[in-house]
Image (cartoon, rainbow, N blue to C red; front, side):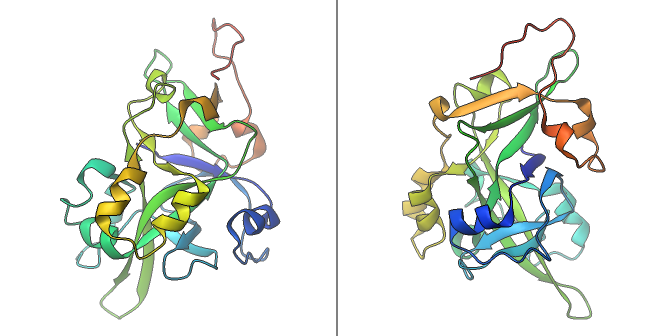
Length: 228
């Protein structure tokens, strides 16, 4: 799964990378983005705007919004099968900008790792979004990050990874393309373009949102070599 990510760059860098309008009075860099938070996304209906949706998808047909707590990730392999995702996959897709994400390696310490692209480039994770209305007619916009099987690099850390899109793929993901042409986009990212290092257990709490949670920390007994 993907339960934490990082978007700690300046607003102007997001604007330049995705050609969207970013307002600094709303966008704030974050080192520990967590489910339940209102976070930046770029939707297929407003691709020139940075929108803010809550992480944890609530299907339009849901009776209880708490279902969003369980739908932070959507498995690429079953998007067309699961009732929570199949309509969104066909009609409501989005990009989630990031400059890193976190996963926990299942070792004795359950060590958290920061995973990022070589050169610290901003990237986009593929996502789905929904609009849900409560009994009073108020609208709540939410999103989920799509995950896929790991590439060779990620398999040493975790059995899943977010779907990371290239710039060309981003445009197709936000287009009116048919589902059949979108499936090839949902594979794992190029191993050669990724790096990682262990970070502090402080990342476990969403209340810890400051630069040091994204800095490298060596677990006891581990030699000082980074994943690359």
